[in-house]
Length: 181
Ligand SMILES: CC(C)(COP(=O)(O)OP(=O)(O)OC[C@H]1O[C@@H](n2cnc3c(N)ncnc32)[C@H](O)[C@@H]1OP(=O)(O)O)[C@@H](O)C(=O)NCCC(=O)NCCS
Image 1: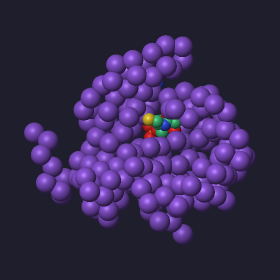
Image 2: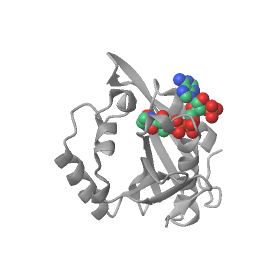
Image 3: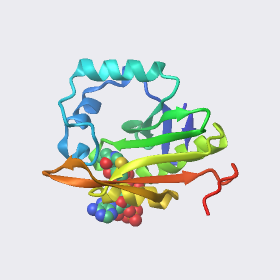
Image 4: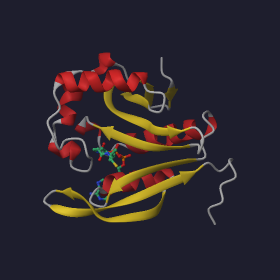
């Protein structure tokens, strides 16, 4: 039973029960975390459980497990974070931690599914995100999902031994009177 789904993936709420050794290994895998803030410090099982506990109680963050429907495997997570119910915007985030699942279109599919939910069900006006300039796979999925670059913070993060720019990207709800021209 999924909260949101396409033919190939299902999204369900992420809970403290999801703190599996596999999930923990994603957060401590430099290949997975090279383009995100997670991974600067080691994540312990207790820290992961505490994080999931806090997120499940949050009123401003919605975190989903991404499930590959072909085998029922938990392959990653995506979220609408920092939901601002007055300004009607939220920050999108995604991690596909199961590396064999990379490059199969799951990231793009999860992104579009969650953005559609943000607009159609939650009536949000705008979804935004921050992506590292040295993370081309993430930029590719965001562009395919319709996100547009709206800003750049120069040398904002220290990543792989050098200072790297970050891009602000956003997508507007076409039905919410966006004034983007
Ligand atoms: C970024 C991430 C979500 C992408 O998920 P995914 O399921 O592998 O993505 P998809 O298969 O939907 O699409 C990947 C696209 O990026 C492209 N891509 C991959 N590596 C690339 C590279 N080095 N340069 C340019 N494009 C690249 C692929 O060609 C593909 O496009 P295509 O469908 O036209 O071939 C996943 O790699 C991930 O979770 N990485 C670790 C965490 C992370 O970086 N999260 C994003 C933080 S902003």
